[in-house]
Amino acid sequence: MSILFFIGKTIKDLVYPFVAFILSSLFRNDINWLWFFAGIALFLMLLLALSILTWYRFIYFPEMNSLRVEHGLLVRKKLWITRESIQSIDVSAGVLQRLFGLVKLQVETAGGKNPEVVLSAITSSEARRIREFLAGAQPHTSNSLSSADVQETPGGHFPMPVSGIPSGYRDQIQLSIKDLFIFSATSGRIGVVIALFGAAYSQLDDWLERTFDVWGWITFWLGSARIGSLIVLLLVVAWVLAIIITAVKEYGFRLTLSEDLLIIERGLLERKQVTVPLNRIQAVHLASNALRRPFGLVSVYIISAGYAGKEGQSALLFPLLRKKELESFLSRFTPQFKHVSAWKRLEKRALRSYMLLPFALSALFVIPAIVWIPQSYGYYTLIMPPAALFWSWLRFKETGWSTDGEQLYIRYGSFVSHQVLIPKQRIQWNLLSQSPIQEGKLLATFQVALASSTAFALFRIRHMPATAGYELKDWASAGRKK
Image 1 (cartoon, rainbow, N blue to C red):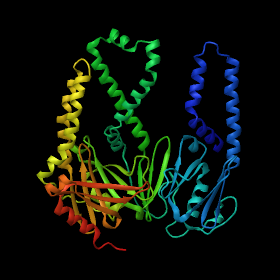
Image 2: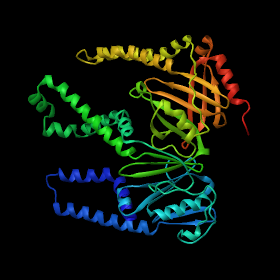
Image 3: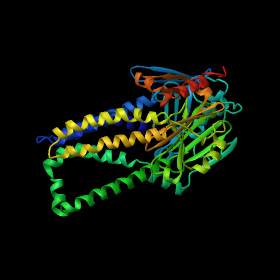
Image 4: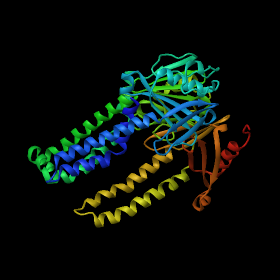
């Protein structure tokens, strides 16, 4: 299985030149099929040989308080991962791994954008032994991690993926099928699917023009009046595909609190498990888009020093909750965070500061668009300045802040509403700034930074009253525990 994954990774890295070679060869008039298939066969044989050697030369073993990894064919690379530097140890199981009873283990350290160690195909018991060793077992220097090499320490047990309720279980919640459908239907991934459709069409556009008149065929069979219906149909198809993609990714989403660890499991085709220590959570991030806000639905994310996922600085903690369930959820799974309902709002004099720059930029774009875009289509850009004003007004109305003892609350957004719950002790640094225009209006911008797996997660309150900004800065700087 490891050899197969090495082959797959190499093909993925070389997919563009490989496809370009095949296509360029196929469209040649004087193609020699014997040489063509011989070249492909030679490439596959070399790839298989290199993958076998790569697997053979890849070793790992415990050494003192670290995991040592050596790999490489011509250039030998040696890596030591100490327990103190580890931010997260993730376990996942794709279709092939689950078919053969294997899992993939990834080890990430502070500041790394990609996992430092990836073991693509190991047994669940081996993954458990590695995690327990890195959690604090006694060192051993054999070439494999046997059960005798690992001694469990209090709070050092890591559950395996899809293994039921682990030891030390305290609480658990699972996303229902109904909520999974609601989350998938309102995820907004339709934009991603449409972008993929557009990218695919742009790659095939030249070939279609030479071989097949798509738009002529559509106009002939449907007529101009039915093109609008076709567009609606394509949007529905994109929406259904977005639902399927999201549902497959988040299927069986389960959050478990075990000891002082949050264990997140999800996925249908690839079952993933991520472990997040409670003490590494820097902030809780609540988000509700325009489709969910009327129904009081919210998604819960976390900002962690060791886990940010592929989505960015915030990682999904639970996909969908009702607002009335939020307080109970936070007390059960993140008891160090509380929700707030009372917010301090911006003053009316800040509205012009929010509107001025977006309106000016959109207005500057309209004039050349009207002049240069043919057939009067440029006049459609006249909608941009009013849209910019509306968007700016939404941002103004959504912005707010509050403090409650040792916790800061920041609210921002426009069509998507965001709320961030930040403990004072998690603030890495804060900054209060004023532009010349803000000084004249007695306004200021307050900014805080939190540690995340990439660098810093930044949050701002723009154009707040300067007096409130100074009070907030004094609050954030005073009385912090060392």
